[in-house]
Amino acid sequence: SSNQISIISHIETYINSDSISIGTKKNSGAIQINTGESDIKGSGLIQLSTGRSDSNSGSVSISTGDSVNSGSLNINTGNSQNNGGSVSIKSGNGMNGGDIELESGSSLSGNSGSIKLKTGYSENSPSDINLLTTSSENDSEAGFITLSGSNGDIRISGGSNKDINGGSINIYA
Image 1 (tube, rainbow, N blue to C red):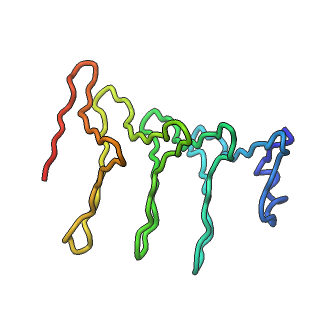
Image 2 (cartoon, rainbow, N blue to C red):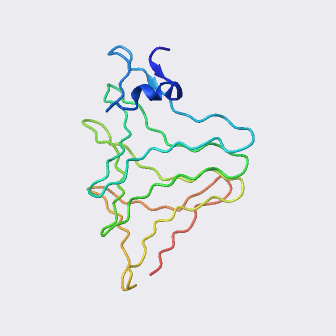
Image 3 (tube, one colour):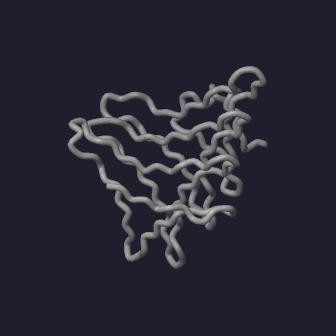
């Protein structure tokens, strides 16, 4: 299609450009970046990053456009016969470490979006969800884990499955 860019064959055309735009107001086009397939070795690496800087490095922003119904943003690893791939989200180190914030969308008239942390299904034993803080350099104190609701309830329940009653809730000091 004329609205697609083959990165391999057209990279030299855009190498000195500040930005790449394709498509029209009717159809904004598509950009697809992928490595080749491999039957013997790994299928390759795609790395998006900004360059090093002595002052402020650039940002990497991935977003969908505004719309009547905006698109989804999916970050997935491929399925595997052995071990599934991991997803790692980590902020930077520094005098103060960078924050990580997960926030659902606001609503003008209905419910705001939900945030769900969920482990995958297992025929043997399910995995855990761990919320952890670490101690400071001098081991005098550790960070806090705070559960709070704004004009809402906080519910903690033990899970259940088709064969067993709900699990226990244990709180230790």
